Amino acid sequence: MKKFLAVLLLTIMVVTAQKAQAAFEDTYWGVRALGMGGAFTAVANDANAPLYNIAGIANCGQREVTLMGSRLFAGLDGVEISANYLGAVYPISEEWGAVSFAWSSLGTPALARYDTFNLGYARKLNDITGIDIDIVNLSAGLNIKYLRQEINFDEEDNDLSNSKGAVTGDIGLLATFENGLRVGFSSKYLTSPDIGYEEKDSVSNMNVLGIGYFSELLPYVNIPTFTADLDLIFIDGETKFRIGLESYILDDKLGIRLGGREEAFDIGFGYEFTFLNDSTLAIDYAFELPFEIEESYGSHFIALSFRF
Image 1 (cartoon, one colour):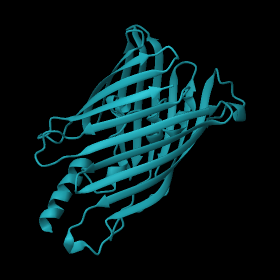
Image 2: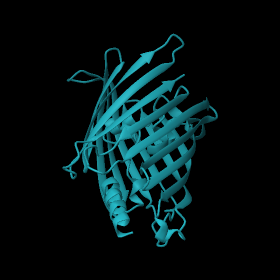
Image 3: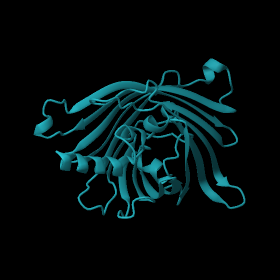
Image 4: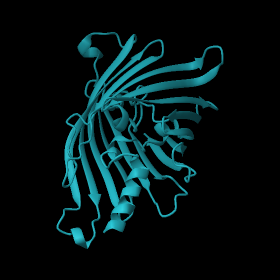
């Protein structure tokens, strides 16, 4: 039993550097967003939006499905951790907004697994506020989330349930200004749900403020289709940050990304294939190098996204 708990604790510490509830608070999903260091709150314009800022799905002009697989902290002996993500956005209309579904999973075989299921809705607010959409595009959204953690206890603890779930929600706001400025806000895990087994283990409410900028051609340096985002994360009385940059070159087909946060440095790229019916297939890759885990030579993420 002690050996099992030691391995489990090591795995959880590697994944979260904190306790089990942090497996839901940290972000290991969405390859495009990860390539930008996880700074995506003021961008949030694709099928990764349900996890970063649900308001962003209102700005998705096409139906989109994305599927991600990964290998985390490669090189650590005896530790096999993966993160998977499935996201889908379905725009209904300008009047009725958009709906989304997302599933994210973080785990290690035969030890522990953490799943989040999201059902989201968002719409633009300009018709309600009376603000000209050409001046600022406003949107808001709501996510209903179901969190589930599962731990495979050994025979000594077979009287314990090996899974625990809880329901909570997110809200999001996004403003995109005519001059390229973007401001996003997301409040996640609104009810601070308890997903502990014998002791309370609440997922803390997390508030994220994102400030971004977009330019079709960045002045002076002439970087095409340029996006920048800075996320400030407020949680448990602490403030964390994430920063990311992105540019598309080769007729907006090849995306190049760079980002970082306190714990890691990220790079990424992606390529989009366009078909005759205006649908696109994007292949994205991101690499993350952790600062505090010297034995690991990084995490690898790859995703396929289809817009139609």
